[in-house]
Image (cartoon, rainbow, N blue to C red):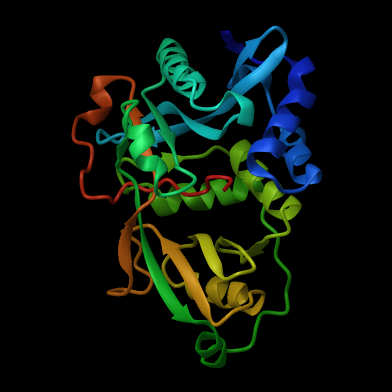
Length: 287
């Protein structure tokens, strides 16, 4: 078994691994590789031409306590073929991702475990729970009944415009992950491919699932509620599950702080003054 960065010729094998590990439609898997996939951001464990395990290292930045934005990477779609699990391949990939990230000058590796039980697994490889959200449950119908009429004007923001909104909203939330315009555009495109929702205003955006989970809501104070109502009008179910940055001024006093992501420091300096209260925000994770 050897570990290497991917090559373009591995694309079909990586799609097959994705479908085996995560299910879903082939169109959804292909969409990720169409939306700006670059082989140098993917690590694979392979043997005799077979891909045993793989993960993607998506470039991002973190807002350090000094106020400086430092390079990092986000581990995405970590998967191992069913016949090769529990053999240490994923652990070896995580260690190589950390080594490669450090060599590239990155300060941290971040990820969002796919389920609660995986927090313990990633803890074994130096990841610690540092990101959080304030999760609020709202009566969807009551929200709609108390709101004014929905706007008639249809607004669509670009990835660049959404990234700028996001940076303004999080510029004082130390430890948070910042995504560039390309990554935000990819997240918006993946939402559409997955049949999930995005709604916009001139001030911001809201990413949500049809079941009523609001995954990210970004707008300046006073601009969030209109987006929330727009999302509620396109969801089903009785409740909205709204995930906000812990420091968000929206819905003050409501909700509970929940863990929502982990970090492995690649340079000790990233830990200087790093908040330990769950306020750093990850978000926009291409769930």
